[in-house]
Image 1 (tube, one colour):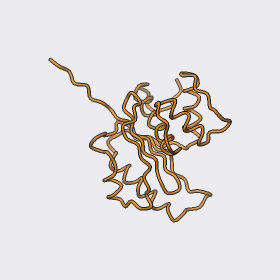
Image 2 (cartoon, helix red, strand yellow):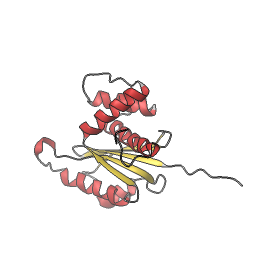
Image 3 (cartoon, rainbow, N blue to C red):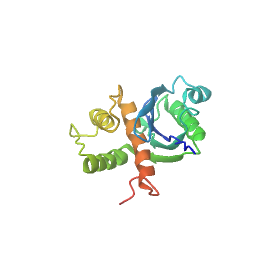
Length: 172
């Protein structure tokens, strides 16, 4: 009798001013798919067509919460919200989590420092931090901070499943 191992996938999504970084990791933190999606030019159906839903169905998907820039909406806000809605709708069978940037970055930085010795190369949680942490977690150097943040978010899903806790960053 042979056993087959089913690979699980964890998605991260980092929305920005007009684009969103989307990264898919397998349970070993290998990058399976990575893209910056420009929702200002993608409609609802085009967004869905771009996603690797069949190739890499998500077990978890972790979103950074989208907030308006400077307390105001831009001409792209509606596009971002529609794109995120498309992703949320099509991945509703996965466990979905939503975090503010400051919350997930601080929590993941602390855990990664304690468990793996990761040290922030700067003094803030900026683009340099995001890229360094994502490279530490996956071994991949991402071109954009949005893909880097998305990879970090996907790794939170992996940690959540491995911890068997009810929510990521639940006190140990």
